[in-house]
Image (tube, rainbow, N blue to C red; front, top):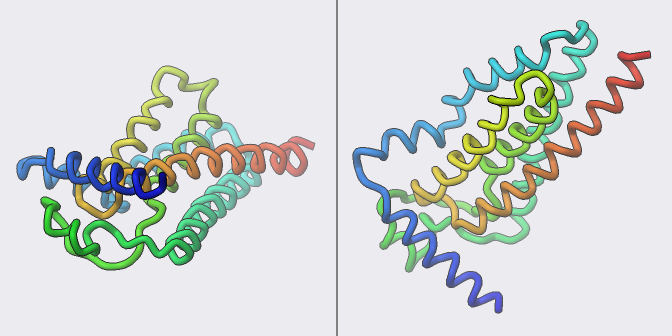
Length: 187
């Protein structure tokens, strides 16, 4: 069964990766570049911090930093534990990819887990104020995940597992932030 899943994952990667076209390459490389998301995250931080006292803003920033560090480090533990090569580093796969030559392990996607954790946390923080717009974070996170497949850095299963882990992490850190805020800020 595991062999079937991995083979399906490989075939799906090759199919999705080869849908790409050169005119779109720059767009997807921009989406996957973590630095290009900074303006979005600064805006979201500003919106989440609106209405919080100074202690609340410090608590928010600390919780967000902890969440990103947590998802990033757990991702690295999984990568080192499973040692599943990235598709762009795996013989028999890299030759069929449109883009990519790399090294290292890829299970599961840190870009996917971080972007989805940020999306879920943001949605929960801003759902009452920006209900119509805040759910755009989900398509953004899915685009980040797809960009990893597009450039050949991750298999679809790596991305899906990263997204699921991001949902769980974003929710748990939102709950953690809410409890800390209630205990230390809203006395």
